[in-house]
Image (cartoon, rainbow, N blue to C red; front, side):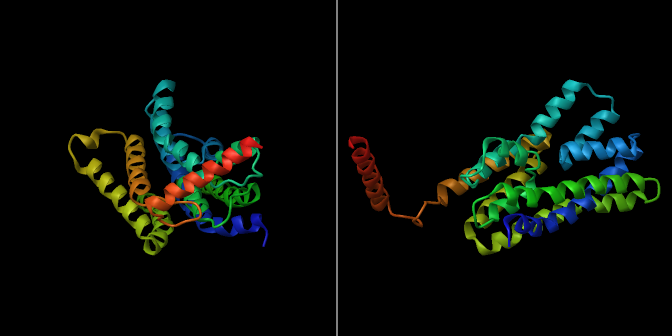
Amino acid sequence: MSEFKVGLKDSIPITTGYFAVSFSFGILAVKSGLGIFLSSIISLTNVTSAGQFAGLGIIVAGGTVLEMILTQFIINLRYALMSLALSQKLSKDMKFWHRFVIAFANTDEVFAVAMQHQKSLTLKYMLGLQIPPIFGWTVGTFVGAFAGSILPASVCSALGVALYGMFIAIVVPVAKKSRPVMIVVLVSLALSCLFYYTPVLKNISTGLVIIICTIVAATVGAIFFPIYQGKKNPSPESASKDFEDDKSDYTDKEGK
């Protein structure tokens, strides 16, 4: 099976989940005064749930461009961290402009699935993984906007939970198989609850909270569960020996 087809297969749950979530965005956008075409264009050019919902609120409230920029920067800054992690798995054949192409739709769910891929990430695989979700997100918005005047508000609220259910379905199977992943997830959950329920901390923006939880949880994983190339949890003595061997090889090559 080609890399593109593998990506298409892996994208199926993301695409279906995106259709449901963007459906509710389309309904909300139309009820907020945006047209069907404009709502669909927003989804096609953004492909981000939290950013679009927050941006829609600013548009409806008549906010300034500066408020929009700052809000989107904070909410979507986590994608910079995801892109840094994803870059470590990219194939050596990945060209510079290829990175710009796959960066467009490096969403939370796409990132989670891509990081579980057992091989290096090629452009064909990433295109197969990303194109269907972009299509599902845009079409879901269009259909939701079209049906906005028909469905009741209770249905719209129920569809908004779909994104969280989809993300849980991606994370839980991996966490059940890996103790380090489970601990990192639990650390992230504990921090998220702390920021949500603590009186002072709950005033921090959602985007900034996501970034803080991500950095702290990733740091815990890096310190207590480091991953070494070629060896699993080597002793300090063997790690030191490997370093000396690598240094000797480098010196020999330079001498030649």
